[in-house]
Image 1 (cartoon, one colour):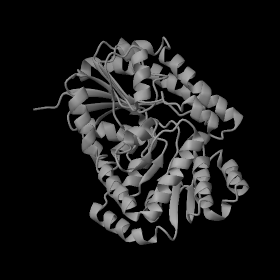
Image 2 (image 1 turned 90 degrees about the horizontal axis):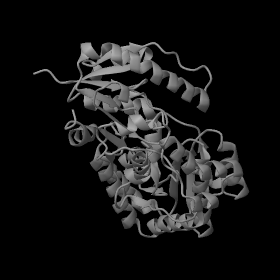
Image 3 (image 1 turned 180 degrees about the vertical axis):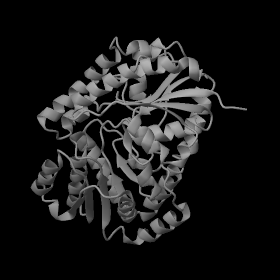
Image 4 (image 1 turned 90 degrees about the vertical axis):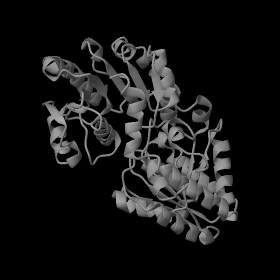
Length: 409
């Protein structure tokens, strides 16, 4: 019996990419287990997908639309708006031939700009959508941010709300049969904009193969070395809201309290120079190793050697960084907000929000210090991390579709 046909709209799915393109490919692949997917995407994206065997049965509807020449926030949104305007007539012209049961929009981007799917006259679902995340004002004020960055963070909730009630977007959201959100913060905003049916799911999958038993045995062997040197790792873009500077301040607190901790910073970007200066001013630079981004396999090796993933990102919609770290048995130390809170598991470390940065730094350092004096508690967190990483497998997406989307179509 032939599968029902479903239109899937994502401009740039890519089987080997991270972030939005990689997630779009993973979600489309999961949809293809239940539907004959008709993928409307860029011509270049179709070529990338066709090289992967999992897309063999996808039907591509390629759209020629060159990327913007300028790499900036505004040029991208202008380009994406033009993609949305181009997409709807392309679908309308092929609806009669395809005869779909509906449409799904799996691009994991924000709700700020969406194609006018409400004009198509068919059922459609959206998401997971992100972008409604923010760091609470009390924390932002205390988070040692430059004044320009602080102003951005304090105005983010207001801008998010304004975007949610944008009259060009609200008709799309209101008429969606079901909308998935990456975090409770975004889910609340989507409800505010008129979505009547919203669920929160974590969008990332982790597909690398690893032996959970071997990972746990390796962590067990590391227990005896924790008191000698406790190795922290931060990996993320050098953007202030990623919180790399807070990881440095955690290290400072540990060293002050007599814990022989070191920190590896895998990062690059606009804030890197300032973070290096913070390390120097706090006299922590001798305990920090800096590295620009490395291939994934090399990063996994670095994670396997480190003892805790200090990742105080303030408002990620989602992040594959956490499932990836958990797959190496490395516990996490996070702010417990945004997509990270959705991804973190019970017992996988300290993933907890505090009203201000000083309190969080103090408790983060206390947790790490406790691990050095009680290696058994650290090992239990390692085991919980490995168990949590097994949750982020591709079949989980199929379960999400069966629960939320398949009944609609």
